Image (tube, helix red, strand yellow):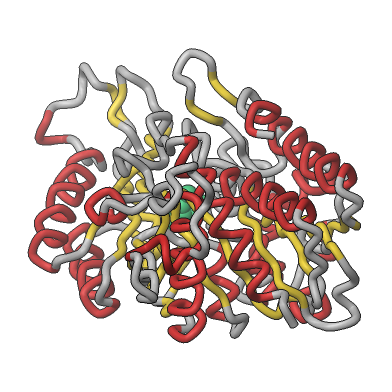
Length: 422
Ligand code: HGY
Ligand code: MN
Ligand code: MN
């Protein structure tokens, strides 16, 4: 499966991915999702917001267990952020089917649309629209770099933008949502573990800063006659770093638009997007307020996601289930006979004694996810992380070892089996 999609949307110069929502690459990936679901006899449907759902069983009978993630990427992103959760979901269902497991409740795979917000600027638009966290009129009016609105892009993709909006029927099909994701950090590297479970998603948001000035000739305009917006922008970027260090949070200006963008002219407008996050919501909001006052820019909030604490009982239960699944696949051959038979049980394998297997590490994350949007809407959820050797993400360097990915699938399969027992 991985081989079937890894070339889709890849920039072969940089090996980064360009998988904007509703781009040709995204449409090819959505077709791939439908093929993989059909190959397994899963009923596929697209909801009014463009999210895809593949079902083993009928969720209108009773709320199901859902896993999945997203297929879109940031610009020049990595291969794993999103797709690893989708490929692992299909592989986990294959593992359950191969052992003859019959889920006692519907089991679904979700592919959320436009999780990164790379094209229209707001992250998780599919899950935010689904849960009512994003106003459909605002969504329809969001524009991309070409000035095309989401409504126009949806129409071109054969969808009805008028249908966007909260979808309680679809949301009601999700009894619990478990998202597997490559770790975007090095927590599992430091813990020496291939798989972990999320505790919290940090509060995070995006703000647009517009610095207005006077467009003018770069050669004939004296310095004292200039109103150059690039200067307050530059001071603001440096000040953001100082405030972030002081406040114990992170702040990033990663997207910049200089208008009109002539090399031989003082710009008239500099637009810059701030991404601010941290474990403490007050500290994040304080940074934004202080930076706004300092900047002198027009500042608009484009998205805000409050802190999400995943359900602690579910988190701890899945951390144990994942640990047992990993132990079963990594335990040394049974010493008794030395014939390398898998050990009698994960518990024996762990320590020989009847002791329990230690749960996998439980980690916070500074990355937003659809699982966080659903949890904020009251859908019980959890996240499974797969080790990322360098921790790098949102970059072509993003990577996960195949052996860790397979352990992630084993953990996800065990989790889905555990949740679908009854
Ligand atoms: O930006 C994020 O945290 C996520 O990768 N969309
Ligand atoms: Mn991402
Ligand atoms: Mn992601």
